[in-house]
Length: 148
Image (cartoon, rainbow, N blue to C red; front, side, top):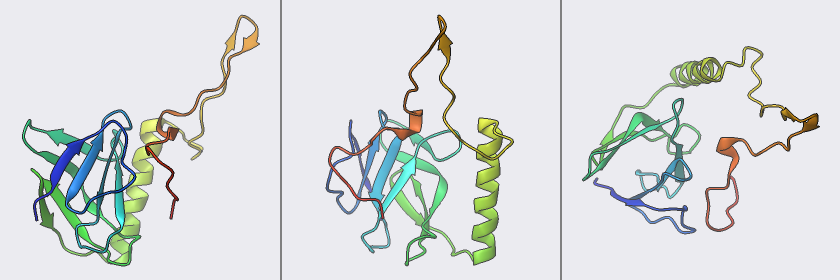
């Protein structure tokens, strides 16, 4: 299966089958699951999540996409717009990977207490500065969307 990539400012309300939408502004890529189940796969782009490679012609995502929370449990790579199917994982392997990913995030964000909270407001001229939204907390959708 070959995906078509589209760079967009905001994620569209309706996600088409066979299209991967990439929003650099929202630091996110989204597509419908390649198995055909219709579920939307959201891949945040960050140093601790997915990395996007655009070679001027096609896109690749790293690491693989394991839809372990979906009924389909599909697992695949996106390499140069091509979907490359990978083997299924057992529950132990999935849980081990999730633990490893959490540890990576904790190390990267340097939160030894395990709390990935927004920074406290800084003082400026004796006054508290208003807290801003965390970088990853902005809305990525152009329309309303429910979180399942």
